[in-house]
Image (tube, rainbow, N blue to C red):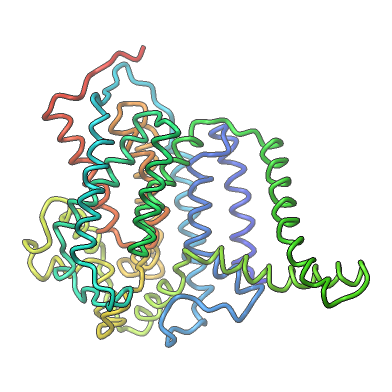
Length: 424
């Protein structure tokens, strides 16, 4: 096993041990980051150690020689994030708290915009168009104000979840709506954002004990194993005689195909292909570093729409800057961009950790202020669902998600649906 991969595995275990000792909870910022970071940024390197036939999601011209160089970038970034969280993330007490009122409006707004989203989908539906076709080739062409307004439905739903305790009936209704939308438009972002928000809300404030968690995980593992084993056993029993011969064949099938299925599952969100693609473009001198300009464009985009940014600023957007150099002539492939790729794109391989440092400062600040009021509570909780999908987007797309929360806050403020409460 590669030394960097070994170091990454050991460091994750060590970081989570210290994270548990600091926060006294298993579900803490270090744990949540480690899970998201693994699936997005090094599950492929881990998988390829066990199966060299694994292929990442990138153009076939992207070679594998840089895989451990990029893994080292993710390794250093994880430690920069870890130290900042350990040192700066503290629970602060505040004498006053601000809370939203009339939050039922959020759920009603979700239902109304979901209805308009359905109308919009069918009015633009083209059964002859392949999935992913006709994607925008530049940032300005990608601007779609109607879809951005309709996306408010997801933000309203998530905000309602964070501020209330939805009934089981409401939760079921929301999940069914999102499953329906995912089934008809083949997109999963909205569903993942909402379901992960439900999970985060329910888990983040609970004390999860290690031994019961280990026990239930063990039961779940063996339960899954036997559920998988029974139909395979029945199939093999038709061709092989003798209990032990059948059992040995079943174990062989599970170990052979089960490992392939497992490796496929843990790589569903992996983005190392594009990370390495970006690294190789920078290494070969085909991509000039942006030195933070893509992040600046992301901030500007929160307040000034892309058509009014001018062609220069708009084209600083990380995903489209990458696409313009890597794959400019392919309108049917977007190549999901990534956090680490944008870090390399801006600061180069040596200083990519700067982006992880900024992320650590942002999360540490929100964690420390999460009890100051509903706005900070929402922003902190929202950060984790955002990162679940945001590690495969550029900063412009991530900042846009936060701008929705700020606009909702502005609405509640102007409509005088915010009240101040004493907390001492």
